[in-house]
Image (cartoon, rainbow, N blue to C red; front, side):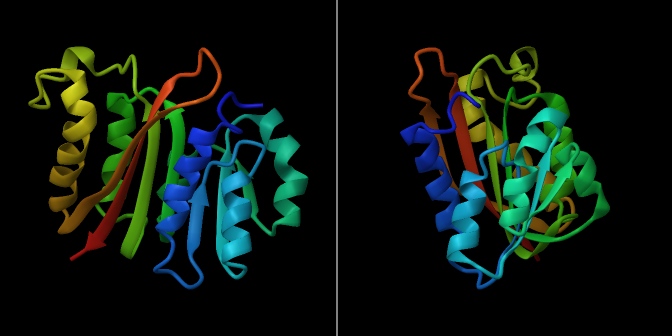
Amino acid sequence: MYVNQNSKSKQLARDKVLARLNNYENPTVISLPADNFIFEQSVRQTYPKSKIVTLEQNKLVFNSGKQLAKNLNINHLNGEIFDYLKNNNKYDVIWLDLCGYLSGNMINNLIPIVQGRNTKKETILALTVMATREKLAKHSSIYGFSNLKQFRKKGLTSLLQSFASMNDCTIEQLDFFSYKGDKKHAAKMNLYIYKLTKN
């Protein structure tokens, strides 16, 4: 079981992403469900005809969720989501609920997404990353920000906007939510929600 999966703050994060699906009648969604599929169950209940693809890299976690995915009519795959997204499939909603450290490698993986590789005319991109101990500390000045706090709140969005514009795309930040789970040693997380548009 993942530390934050049943916390009130995590559920609020899910609700924030789910609320952004309102503009889609039958959304195509790709996400990272762990083994609980809490967000995906809400999508299926609200949008019965939605198409949902999920990725889980850990084989044991993947296997524990296979039956539930089948019951929910979800295309559940064992693999790494950034590798899978190289197939160029298009989605209305992409939730990268990574919960890992923000790193230069992660940003490199985000570049083709914000440049429209996996997006329709308008796509919602949600990103969850840890709000502490980023591996960008020594590089924050390279991105034009004096400290990591500034980079977390404004810098990442500015950086993604600059990459998107290189391929005639725009990215608009719709929400930023910083939260922590109910457990004593739960890590602080940042949820970014963007709208990607192909011009």
